[in-house]
Length: 177
Image (cartoon, rainbow, N blue to C red; front, side):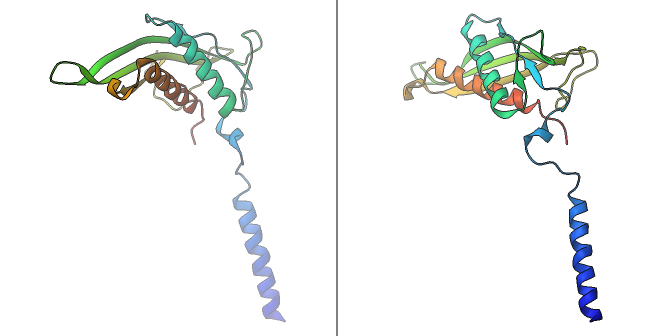
C-alpha cells in the first residue's frame, strides 16, 4: 500500500516537473520574430548598377521571403510598423578560370547590398549582426560561380545570387536566442 502511494506520488511529481520545465517554451515561428512588429514596408530597391532589373528582382525576392517565412505582413509606408530600405550597390563579374586560349571557363558574379530595417521611431531592428557605433546600415554580399560552357548564363547566376541574398536578409530578421 505504501509502495504504491510512493510510486503514485513519484509519478505525479515527475509529470509536474516535466510540465513546469517546458512552460516557458513557445511552439512555431512566432517566437523567432519580434512581437511588437506586425507589418513591414519594403519599397522598390534602388540599384546603382547598370542592370536596373536587379533591384526589382531583389525587391520581389525579399518580399516573397518575408511573406513566406515570417509572421510579418507587407503593407504601405503609412501604415507599416517598420520599414526596410535597401540599395543594391554593386554587381560585378570576374573570371575565375580560363582556357589556354583565354576564353572564360568559370566566372563569378558578386552582388552587394546596403540594408537597414528600422521601426517607426527610427530604431534599428536587426540584432543578429554586429554594427559599429554610429552606423545604421548593414552590408550583405553574395557570390555565385557559373560555367558558360555548361550552358549557364549571367542572368541565371544573378537570379540565384538574388535568391540567396533574400534568404540571408530574412535570416537576419530573426531574434537572438
